Image (cartoon, rainbow, N blue to C red; front, side, top):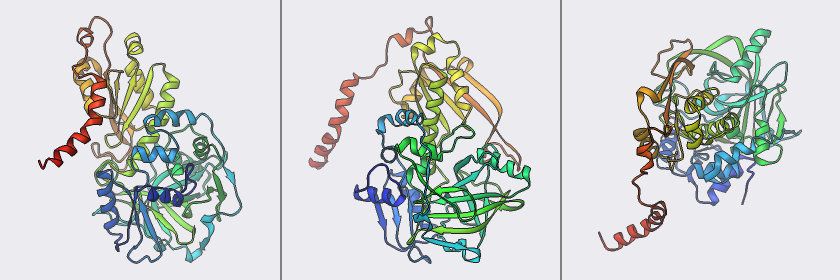
Length: 474
């Protein structure tokens, strides 16, 4: 049985199947809706990963999805304890390990160039009912700064526009857009490689927010304790994971554009039509009997939300703890774009406007809607009921709400029309920590829960009690 570190998507899927966490779908499925609908159904029930083996019109191909959904699954992929996932990964980030270049790789078992590099050969599912063209949702964009050689990887969306052309939605707040601007300054097209079906850690590290100049491949080594094997592309100097399933090599054109949208984005609604850069495909390499990976996006929660939120939280915890003593934990609520930060009550009561300062630190590297700051009284910051209890008992909007108006955000949020320009959003910070002495009489009385030890015992007893109820025929 494969074990951590999982160096390919195939190894990871085999592990999931042997542990009862993957279901093979052998019935014929259509790219127009079956795959996205079944992925949608599975994540909403915390269900298994899915492997489709019979794709209409694409004999020999397999499509996988859902392999990185759920905290337990992600913790296994990262080689950490689910309960301490954020803390362990944040600590590992301190010891980066550069990748190791190899000369041959499984991702080059099949090489297609020129007219043979046809996107129609790849089974790209549609996600939404109103989607105009199929979009590659699990494509990891790899772009290189022309002067320093710094490579940046991040999951991006690519619309399939023709046999050798795609649209790429480049967000102006992201690092790959900044690198693209360097090519525009030089008057050259930007080489790009789209990685599909990489190992799970590559997908996860591609979602971290790291400083400019830091390559996420180094984080792969930090998490696994060994270098990631990479190979050079056929048409550029870009390095890609050797074990990836499919690599699409191309160039982002300087003065040619495509129409993007509509697409059911992570902000729940369909995007508006937008003028975006065009990618010209030059080469496709892949493994024999290839596997296509599909990230279900659209109405949350989705797999894309889960992996993005998890890695955002790891990087945010690392940054916040570096900046402030007293930051204990972080949780990113994957579909609300709200971060909950747990801080020390002692520090929060002694440090004026501590919650507000922590909130601003979080906003530095993330396009979040809001930050809620709580203290140790919140027993489980991953549970909205506990968080809302803290807001109910410790928050007054007239003095504990901070609003930051008109902040540059993502263009995708439907609450503020952007009409092709920069997206704007108001942000907020909720201070739900216990106030300093003079206002703490209510808190000193304590919470009205049964004893914690008794509640833990009750949770262990409860399944058996329910089973006995069924056995009684009730």
